[in-house]
Length: 167
Image (tube, rainbow, N blue to C red; front, top):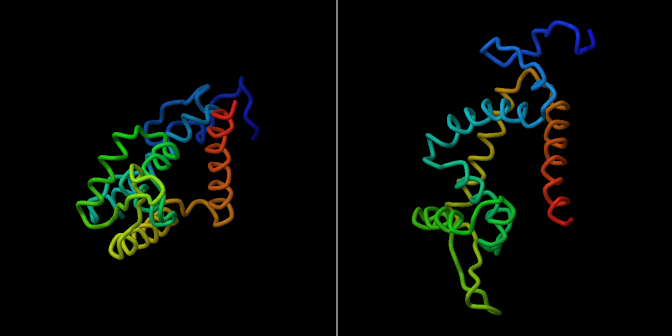
């Protein structure tokens, strides 16, 4: 049955677990993204956070450095919308664990380029594989095509940040 403002809230229009009617929040994407992130955060904690003692930002930085050898802290901070001091603390933790290496730039010694160590690359791959499997299990109600579509749509939403910054 299509949703209409005068119709009583359908079961699908209730906040998960609480049985609270979402009301107008049902159409607010930020709210729905926040609700969905509760499930994906739980997967992260179970698959990566607790077993590998990694925070979400640390995993994300590790995975991005692995995918982008030679990137800089500035690039990471901008790409993740995190302050440079917070990125530096995160990189310091990863470096202390032997997962990331810093090297001075040849053209500008003030710039530090980052890359993963062999252990860091292995950990990044293992964590990503565990997350993909964990999310597939947690989101089993979605088909493979629906998960792919959701990922594509969320990526498009994320790209709006870049367009807004260009204005």
